[in-house]
Image (cartoon, rainbow, N blue to C red; front, side, top):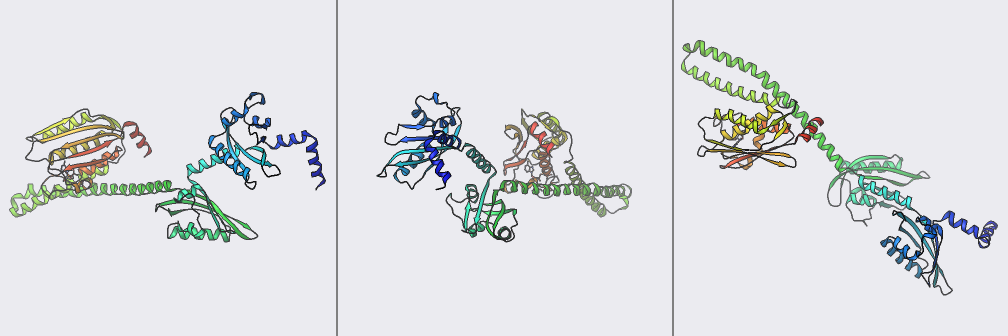
Length: 503
Ligand code: ADP
């Protein structure tokens, strides 16, 4: 034996101070238990200090100690100790949670060694404690953060060919906790085509050149879900040979899908801006030559009517009718394209506005038997002109598409929902077939035969745009031959202003 080792062992035996120094400087607790009288044991003061107690504070330590140990850990430790006492080859080495005197948890790594008599029976237990709270807390924090960010780890040992996935990586792949992947199995989870080819190429490069990677790919999970993941990889080399590739694996599906949605949204927005510009130019610029045509038709009729044969005059009436229809369409388009101009939000009382609309429309609908029913409509933050156009279109349509056989009943109701107000305009008119309920909000959609009703097919497209401008949505419910309900939502003031600012 090394003479210094020999000397140290002798010193430990002869001088208590040496042993005390060792236990106090390297351990956070030490005990020695008489297994034949298990209630008898000696614990050093350092152990109690680790748990926040002064030696003098504990008169009945044994009872208090059991209460300090986490119940689950106590049961697991008892089982493990049992095994160690029966078989010296099974080590006793457990991390046990204790309650500190101040209430927080202290993680102690407890190791024990059974001391046996000549027959091999364990008669004493020597135990040591090391405080691993810091490490444990860091590990728990790391695990929680990884869980929140859905980050897992993976590694492939190229020497043993063993593939390791942690809990989160397994969860992302949606495989059971005891799933043991192989290298090819891991690759097969990537979506066939560019994702699988990319990861195979990047892994190959990491293993041959040592170049790391950080890429976003598509994965098909064990339950057939297609998700986006971020795979980061690095490699270890030894003696010029790659021994390990490892890295991080993150579920980024929610972020990727939001990005895609945003991208689609901006493409759509750009397209709709383009469309608006086109409609504006078409309707504005084309109206001018149309007005010229109409003007000259009038001049011809006024100045040369007598000189023209009746047949030609008939043709001219047809031309004038067509030009008028075209003019209505263009005016409608022009209004539609102007709707998205940003204006100032104002407080608009829908009940007052509806009152005005009803007065205007009823005077134009003389002789029609109409009854209106509405009350308690709210004030909203909105664009007054647009909201008036909205109500004009909805009430105007209810009047236009009434049943001749029935007195017309129009009812406007309002409900306070979580997403804001829900306004419904009910009529008992001709109704709309189920298959057309979505179509009617498209530009130029008219369900009836040409010439049967006046109109341009722009009114409801305008309504949709106006409602969306107010952060809401519009839809129709109907029973053919019985009547329709047009429902729309309008957000409350605060949300609406927030939304406008964000645009
Ligand atoms: P239009 O100028 O033709 O009225 P709209 O865009 O206002 O255009 O409406 C589109 C189509 O939806 C109408 O042509 C009509 O067929 C149908 N429609 C709209 N409102 C009603 C209603 N209240 N009852 C039955 N059909 C309706």
